[in-house]
Image (cartoon, rainbow, N blue to C red; front, side, top):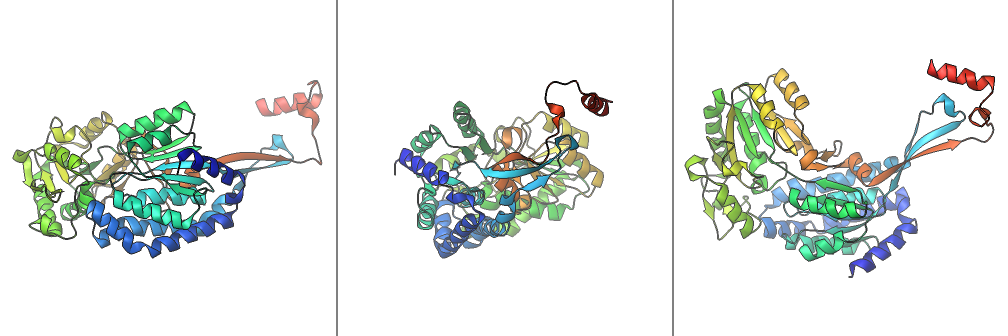
Length: 457
C-alpha cells in the first residue's frame, strides 16, 4: 500500500478520537496478545531462519519479554492514561492543576534485525497503550521475521490503525521523508544520525535506541567463576548480536590471568568443545557482518575460539587476551561473538579511560566492594546496566531502557514506554466562583503591595 495513503488514513482514524479511550487501547492490546500466542510457532521458526535462534532462546529473549510487556500494559494502561492532579500554588487560588497524557498521533517505529520481533513489537505495544496509530518498519535483514510481523499486524488491526511497511533503504528513506508525529528508531549510531537529520527538518520528536561499546568492569574482589559464567551468557547470547552485550572487559591486572581461564572454561561449558555442533548456537545475520567480524579477530591474541564456518555463517565464541586500545577490535562496536580483555591497575584508571570514550548503552560491574560499585555507578555515564550480572536490567517493565549521549535518547518499557509515546499536557482548571482582582491593572492597591512584600521578602 502507498505510504501517503496509509498516513492519510491513519491521521483520519486518529482524529476521529477512537484511540483515546483506555478501553479501546486495552482491547487492542489483548487482541495483539492473542494473535501473537496463535503464531508463536511461526515466530520461533522465523527467528530460527533469520538468526539461527533456538526455540528456547526465542522465547527467553523475544516472545517472553513481549508477552510480559503486553500483560503489564493491559494491567496499567487505564491508570497511565488517566493522568493525575498536582499541587497548585496559593497564588493561583482558586484552581486545580493536573497532568494529562496525550498521544502524539501517527508514529513511525523503525526496528533492527538482531532482535527483530522484540524490537518491533515492544515499542508498538507502548505506542498502542499511549493511544497512537503506528507504522512499523522492520529490518530487511531479517525477512522471515518481518513477514510474520506483517501477518500478525494485518490480522490484528486495520491499516488505518497499525500497518507494516517492508523493504530496504528505499522504503526507509521514503518513510523518513514523511511527516510523522514521532519517530522511534532502534539501530546503529550512523543510521540514527540520519534519522535525526530527517526529523529535524520537520521538528518531529524522536526516540533513538542506539548502541556503542559497553564495558564490563571486573575488579579483584569479584566472584570470578560466577562473573565469567554470567559474562559469557550475556556476551554470546544471540552470537553477540545484542546492543547491550558486554563489548569488552576491563579486568584488574592482578586477577586477569585467572579470570581469562575462567572465561575459557565457561565458553566450553556453555557451548561445548565444538560450538558449531551445538543446535542452540545461532549464526551471524549475513555475509557482510560475518566478514567484518572476522577482520576484528587477531589470531595471535585468541585465548579460546577464533574458528569460523562460512557455510553456516557461524563464528565460535571467542575470547581475546592481551588486547590494547589500539587493536582493531577496539575501534568499533563489535556486535558479534568476540570478547576482548583489557586490564587496569587502579580503579581511578577506569574513570579516566571511560571519560574519553563515547557514552555506552550499558555498563556492567563485577565486584564485592560496595565502594567500588557506588563510585562506578555514580561517576560513569551510561544508559543502564547491572551489578554482578549482564543483560538482565532490560528484562523488566518497571525500569525504562534507553541510552545517553551517543548511545541514544529517550527510554521505553512499561511506564517509560507509555511516556515516550505521549505528550503530557499541563492543564490548570480555574474556578469561576471567585476572581481575585490583584492581577489586573491598575496595580495600585494596598493589597498588591502587600503581596509583593510577602513573596519577595
